Image (cartoon, rainbow, N blue to C red; front, side):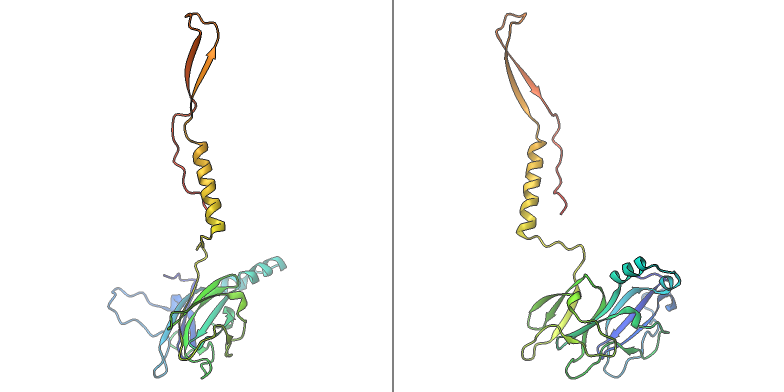
Length: 238
């Protein structure tokens, strides 16, 4: 799902990519329509990823102060490319110029015998983390900030060390809202929830008092109900 003020990036397994405006795509009436050409593929080449990225037109028109520039730099988006031989790099998304759809594209990462074909390519931020999977069942978690920033027409650096005929089959970005429940997170949360439940339970106390009474009874017992309802305690947010 994309908006008219966003751009689309197509990446191929031979390292080519193209960026064009989403409004250049026509809206078709039926699902069975053939569609329109996004990129011209070389023989045996194929698309490995489609990414949606915000347009830079609105940010370029505004005059930015030093604080705004530093904030934009912290939120700068990169295009991360991973090859099947375990190499990769991240490139500022501004290096991918906007062109018309249907072209041959530009080099996103060099497809060399060292690198092999491209497995994945998608937008990331500096503070994101990714998961890389191989055809041997191995998975590695890598922080984006640990991956070198390089220009488009480069080979990148080694990200995962492979053995024998092992190949990278996929790489995904970890969701920002994902919470890993470690003992240091889970146990305090359970303790807080249990304590809150005990505090809010209804309290029934019998108070025994001794005093002269008009009825002549020496001891009288008065039930005292401090709380009438039991609130439903949700699990505390982490």
